Image 1 (spheres, rainbow, N blue to C red):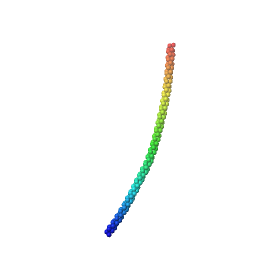
Image 2: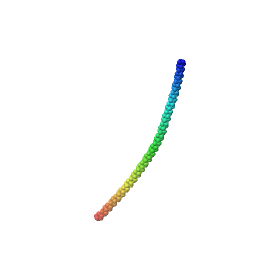
Image 3: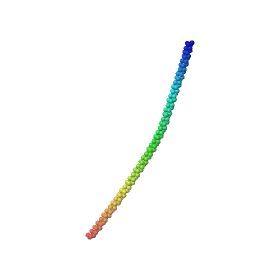
Image 4: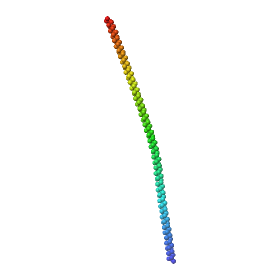
Length: 167
């Protein structure tokens, strides 16, 4: 009977050991499944993080591209404005230079006209002077002739007087 009891006890213990091992195996399987689930969850979380980071980077890059496009537009507008102002300034400078040249030409023309007028006046004065000199010479010649004639007449009268005195 003791042997039977011992055998029953041993069988009971073996059964309990089996159950315990089966339970442990089940728990190991559960833990392994749990670990696999956790690893998959971590992997999915990592994938989501990576995708979110990629999306953020893409959004940042798109924002930078938009900012660059805006900066390029602003730069282009400023460059066009600068070119427009530069063209206007060059046009104004050209117009000023043309006006200055026209004033200078007008001044030179006026100077030339004044010089011609002065030359004409000088020529008229010279001609007048020559005319006056000619008239003075003619008067002097006339006076000289009249004086000589008067001297001859006087000399004739003296001679006649002398001749009368002698006779």
